[in-house]
Image (cartoon, rainbow, N blue to C red; front, side, top):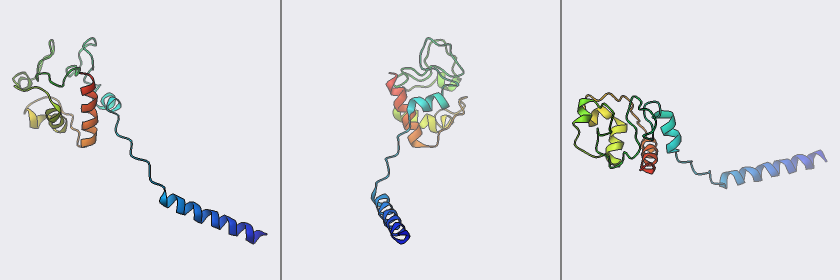
Amino acid sequence: MRAIVLGLCTAVMLVMRGADAQMPLPAAKPPDGAALFKQQCAVCHTTNLSEPMRQGPPLVKIVGRPAGRVEGFHYSDGLARADFAWDEARLDAWLSNPQAVIPGVIMVYRQAKPETRAAIIAFLKELN
């Protein structure tokens, strides 16, 4: 009897291993832009104009907005003189390395992961 039980257990384990080997892994969950913004950006930036300004300007409606142009926020000289509007490519470059986009800016945040930058930018686009 013991041999039969051990044999059945072994057979079940082999079948289970085979099933595991054939089962596809669940797809990786894409990063959540809102959560990433809260973790990495909200210390310095708000997402609405009714909250008091923080170290950085509010980022509501940033996509398409001229750089360095939020009423009541004091920008660094480089950003105040910037002559472009924020788009996805510019935001991606900015989040990668702000000083490469505009030398001398104060923002020190850098995000090396393209998927994290893309999720944050997608979240910001939703605020437009």
